Amino acid sequence: GYLHGKRGMEISFAGRLIAICDVYDAMMRERRYKSAMKPNHVMAFLSKLASMGQFDPILFRKFYKTLGKFPIGSVLTTNIGLGVVIGQTADPEKPVIFLPDKGEINSNKNHNIRIVEE
Image 1: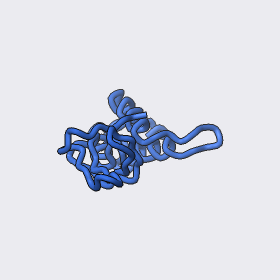
Image 2: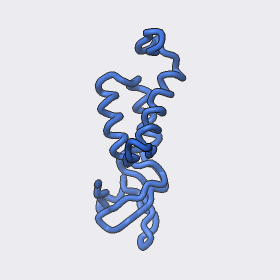
Image 3: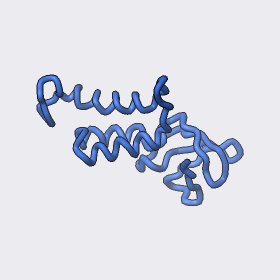
């Protein structure tokens, strides 16, 4: 919208969605001038931007719920060991995690597992 001074709903649906995806992608990638950020840190930053009105709030909530705080493929440290996110749950902050010694654990239902954020 910045080229034509459009704001809010004046910006096309595609433009509002691409804005979220573009910032997410840029922050996740390593560049010559910066290191890549961890997904949970990117989501925290995007949440802050969304709360300040930088993104369509409905689209951002859908984006966050779909990818989750820890997207599929993220390697996590938990209170019971390292795991890999293999799915999302109704709570975007509590994914389904695969732990080599324990198998698949739904952290939304298993309250004994805690994700240790770095």
